[in-house]
Structure formats: C-alpha cells, structure tokens
Length: 639
Ligand code: COA
Ligand code: AMP
Image (tube, rainbow, N blue to C red):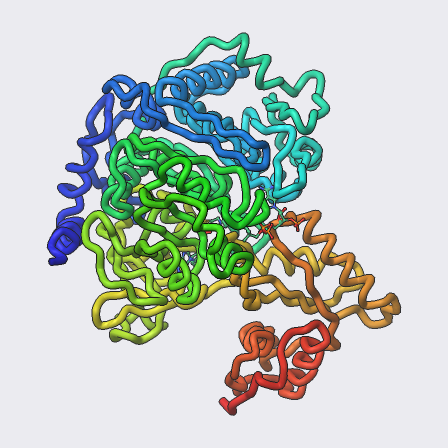
C-alpha cells in the first residue's frame, strides 16, 4: 500500500494551501498568515505571507514551554578534543538567549546580517539560533574556504558583526581561523563593526583592540534576550553556494516556510519522531548542516548530534559506530563519500562488531549520487535500509526521496526514488517538451516550489530569475540532468553546468579557472571534475602557457595549486594540473570539456562533429597519461 505517500503527494500538488496550511498548525505563530501561498507577485511566490513567528522560538522555547525542557536537544561529540557535551532544551535556550544578548549589546538588530565563520562546535549552532532569536540574518561560511572567499561573502552580505573561533580542528591538524578572518576583513570593502571570537584552548587568537570581542567575557556580562517576532517571509539566513563563476550565489531562506517544511520532513522523509536521536554528519557550513544538524531536528523536538570529527582517523574508521551506539542514534544522514572512506579503511566492517547498533534504523545519503557499491556495502553491514535522496542548497530539503515516514518503496540502486510531496518534478527536453519515461533531459520543478525553498538570491531578484526560472517558463531549473522511469523513480545523472561535487562539497570549476587564468604564465586553462573512488570527483587542471615561457612546468603547476588553495581554500582539493600545448575546441572556440573528461575517466566518447582539430585529443590523452589519468581504453567513435 503506497496510500500515505500517494495521498500526500496528490494533495500537496492539487491543494498545496490545505496541505501546508495543515502542517503549519503544528508550529507556533504570534499571528496567523493571511495567505498560505501568496502568488500575487509571480514568479516570486511567498509562503505564509502576513504570518508572524520566530524560528528560534519554534526550535527551542516552544519545547521548553510544553514541558520538554529536560530533554537533550543537542549533543556535541568531538573525538578531536575528547569532549562530549549535552545541552537540554532549557539549557540550549538559555545559552542562545544569552548569546542573543551579546549580539544585541554589539548593535545587532532584526534584519542585520551576521557572518558566522565557525568550526563544528556547539557555539556555531548557538550563534545561528541567537541570530534567529533576534530576527537577524545569519550567513555561515564553511571553515574550509580561504580568506578571499570569505571576503566575497562579507562584501555581499554586509554584516554588522562576525562571529568566529580561534581555530578549527581538521583530523589531527589545528587550523587557526583568526588569521583567515583578519585577512578577509583586510581585503573586503565592507568592514563589520565587531567580531566576537570564541577562544578555544588549543589556539589563542590575537585580538584587535577595538573590533574584537571575547565570546566568554561577553557572555559573562550579557543579559538574555527574548524572541523577536518576524514575518514568515522575512529572511532567516543567507547561504552562499557555488555558481558558475567566482561570484557565489546568496541563497535566501525565509522563516515561515522553512519552519513548516522542515518540521514536516522529519517524520515524512526521515521517519523521525519527537524525542528520537538524530545525527546528520555534515558541517554547519553546508545546507545539510543548516537544515538537519540545527533547524529541522530542533523544530521536531529531537536530540541532534553535532559531530566534530571525520569518518576515519578520529581516531579510526569505527567512530561512526561509536557515536551511533553511544547516543542511541535512530537515523543518520551523511554523504556517500564518508561511507566510502570507512569502507576503504575497514572493508570488512570489523570495527562495527565492537558496538551495539540495535537502535539504529535507517541510513540516509545525499550530496552526490550514491553509488550502488556504497549502498550495498552499508546495507549488508548495517542491516538497515540505506536511502539515497536528492536535494540542493537552493531547495533546502529533499526534492526526491524514499519518504520513509510515508511509504518505504523498493530501492532501485542509482535512484533517489520518487518526488517528495510538494515537488512536481518533470523532465524536459531542450525545446521544453516533456520527455518520455526513461529519456534524459533537464530535471525541472513546476512552480510554485514548496515552502522552505529559496524565495530569491540575496539582493538580486534578477539573478534569481535568470539562473533558475528563465530556461523553461513556469519551471525551476535544478541544473541537474536525468530521467524518470516508468515507475516514477527519478535518476539524477549529471550537472548541466560547471558544478562538481568533491567529497560532497559543491564547487565550481569556473571559479577555479578564473584563478588559474590569473597566473602570469597561463594563457588558457580548463578545469574538469574527474572521477575519484573516494571523493566522487576531483578537480583536474589543464594549462596552456604563454609563448616564450621558459620556467619549468612543475614549478608553474605547483604555483597554481597553491593559488587555488590560497584563493578558494583547501576544500577545493585541487592538487593536480598538467601543461598542454593547446586545448581541444569546437570550430567556434568552445573548449570541449566533456570530451576531455571522458578521456580522463577512461570512457569512450563521441568525436564531436564540430571539433576543430581531432589530433589534439591524442595530445590530451598523452598529457593525462603522464599524470596517471586516462589510458588507451578511452576510445573515440565518430560523431
Ligand atoms: N576548516 C578548515 N579546513 C577544512 C575544513 C574546515 N571546516 N574542512 C575541510 N578542510 C580542509 C581539509 O583539512 C583538507 O585539507 P588538506 O588539503 O590540507 O588535507 C581539505 O580541506 C579537503 O578536506 P575534505 O574534503 O574533508 O577531505 P579529507 O581528505 O580531509 O577527508 C572525507 C575526506 C571523505 C573523509 C571527508 O571529506 C568527509 O568526511 N566528508 C563527509 C562529507 C560531508 O560532510 N559532506 C557535506 C554534505 S552532506
Ligand atoms: P549542494 O547544493 O551542495 O547540496 O549540491 C547539490 C547538487 O549535488 C545537486 O544539484 C546534485 O548535482 C548533487 N546531488 C545532491 N544529492 C544528490 C543525489 N542524491 N544524487 C545525485 N546527485 C545529488
């Protein structure tokens, strides 16, 4: 019986106002909405317009007031510092209220932006919730980004304050954050008034005498702040994500729709109830961290785990099983790359035998396509369903999933199963015509998008329309290509733009090309995402040097690798580049990146009819051979 899913799906599309209006009743509102779905300014749809609420109230205070103040809200589990710290709902609310007092003391008010550049510590979640409490708009920047990327975000969001910590801990390395933050502020045009810095014991940050504020000292003097009512349609946060250039896109999330959709998703998609222990092993710098480490589990009244560690090496490939067993985790969510890392270190899952995993019910994977090997390995060893699901920073929650709280469909490997209620997913061909079952095309979503999705890009309505709504009239373009089979299962095959997915981290090869092109000896360049057994994809650079350059290729490659690390950050994992005489192009001058990628991945490729000079492909293959990629297995078929 697929009834629960079928009914929810049908109602969500045929009668979205009733469907979402009913689920909104489970949230707290100071004032009810005028309209569930406001379509008065198409294509800018708004959810719960006129409604007044507060996200932090819904995440914390509401549970305390209902008598669940003693329930554990958040467990900070940090194998890298040997710490486990638990906060009950009442304790977390009090900490958040106090930190909201600190922010208010330094002038942060409703509508102000606050950039958070934080490692995976409880204070990251506390700072996010404190912003929400005040109606301020947070923008969390992932710690693995370099000063330059942070500066770009500071300039775009124009924060009144920045919250950071003295360091992050990456495996066994301590990464000082403050020098990166200082460098970012130095190069950014916009300067925040204050930076609130949490000093961690393993690294002491130098403090700027007039700008920097010590977190601990400020907390001692602060008085708690209450929740500030905001409109459902007011922004809760901005999360920058890679676009097709070095200029990241500021995805906006509102308060009301986000709260309703995320709370509903905890049961419908993840089969998690109030009081259950839930673990999303991601980072607060990514959308998964926003939605499923912090907000959704707290809206639902769950216990959420915030984990500062890696799947391997902190201390070993058994750490996931230790966390699941120690905290009695019911469901976990992570990226397939994390399980590939474990599988590589402990293929027989010997370390799992040391732990009691009897409370564990479902493993959810997302962020990249789940390869069948990883799914079957996890199913075999864990003995629980392993559920792939598909979503994006922009969407904020799953577009396609096996909705475990509605109906558990048979898994088809390679597919994240079916469209989630609320999502009218379709496949269109290049002319915008519906594709037949099984035929690959653009994966699009018919407007309006459900609540919780991006209402616009920060300060740039036009870019929102251009990037997401212009390709097909009346549809949101996901920029993923794929197909839907005759049973309604969705298959996500590839991005249609230059985005690559490295260890579940979304990166733009265009942004990397912009950096390479800045090297004085580089005339032309291309960056491709090539297959990698651990990280899914890795970036690989091709450089054409200026005429007359006599320096060694190795030296130049070393310099460009360093430049990308410096300007984009270590998370780009850009470690390999090769120098070639020329790049394969079409007669109109377009670089044939797709063909180059096929060669690097040892796949057969179709010789493009428009190629300018086919002999270049042999040169590319030879260059790839010298750095351990490609082989003569990549064969061309005539176009
Ligand atoms: N702050 C500072 N540096 C960071 C960072 C952070 N928050 N996160 C990553 N980095 C650095 C790493 O130290 C590494 O630097 P290095 O080149 O000096 O070694 C680089 O960025 C790449 O990091 P990462 O992609 O994490 O690779 P890894 O080799 O250290 O680990 C995995 C590989 C698979 C174990 C790891 O990527 C992982 O656990 N992934 C889980 C996926 C995930 O959380 N996805 C989010 C979406 S669900
Ligand atoms: P991000 O914005 O970082 O969440 O990345 C979103 C992109 O990751 C999507 O557009 C897809 O290309 C890819 N992605 C995420 N989840 C999946 C999945 N389950 N299957 C295939 N691709 C996925």
